[in-house]
Length: 284
Image (tube, rainbow, N blue to C red):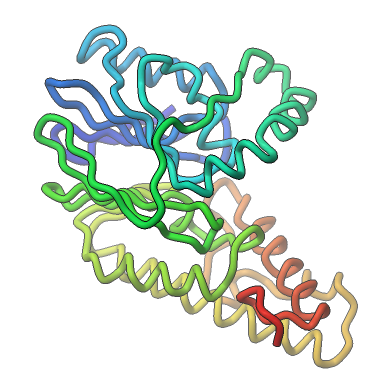
């Protein structure tokens, strides 16, 4: 697992076991804040050991979940003395489907055998402010990638932890194109010095606008190309003809996983359009 130091007391961990998923640690004399966990206990324990080395045992005061997906929440249980914070909808979705999802994951991966589902303790609807030591951050709802997504903007250091709203390819299978578009534009307006993606490398100030613009262009391209397929009555497998590079993004990031995510996006768009729904999930 790679560790990137973003600011003096802010560290980003990048998984070597699953899709370069990220978790962010903020250290203060009063304790630590952890934004997202790793899916596999081995890597989450590495993060816990890092924090203990710097601050001592049981130093994590808050764990923030950017959304309910397993690769971001399965490590919650390893921080029993911390409060877990998430959006209202995140808790609802974890209550509704989290246990069944964890059971499936355990059947597929023995490495998850010990994982326990831990729900958020503290939730909010639109936004909340969190202060610990010298760190002050704003948590805010960012529905797009998923309906329960949130972002974390560290105000003093201008570090934006975007969760899966920003990643090497926008992933809208469980969200919406229009929601993702709106959120990406609002994140760009924050002009962060650093942006932590949900998966992949940390973006520097000069890369943020370029990356978000490329994501917006990709979404427009995907919708346009799938619309053409549906209009001419092409079968669903025809979406595989639409290469990710034709929409302006590279197939290389996340060890090539982006190509599969791209195909998932196209398939979801095709199904929505065939059902007579617009890409934002409403009736067209």
